[in-house]
Image (cartoon, rainbow, N blue to C red; front, side, top):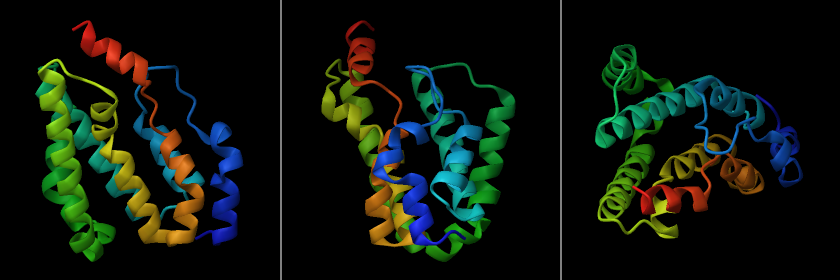
Length: 176
């Protein structure tokens, strides 16, 4: 595990622009880019990174289901396995479930509220931020793994992972 000084250097505020995964505007983060970011830039333990990646896969599939998008059978099978087998058995989650479950519950409630407001045609800057609870979860995991000081230092790097643009988001729902 990297020392706190190395983590701060890898993900410090001065490096935010250079640390963001190489994505075109509007493109979703690919799991491999997230994994690299979690392990290298944020210096998360493998188990923490894997748990966050499993959550990411679930979020993507659940959002596709909610939107009525086509679901790939391999993705569905992967999420079924992750939710029922891998995630509960993950050592990072197992040892911290009492802390992580309330954060997950809050993120689900925020997503559901945002989604309801979006479907009513009232998407705005608040719904844009509330739908991005995954990044709150990443920040919380960083804090659990590295402590408050490191988490505070690298929080701008975590924020930089959110690649969706507010104006494009608003336009998507206004033109839907």
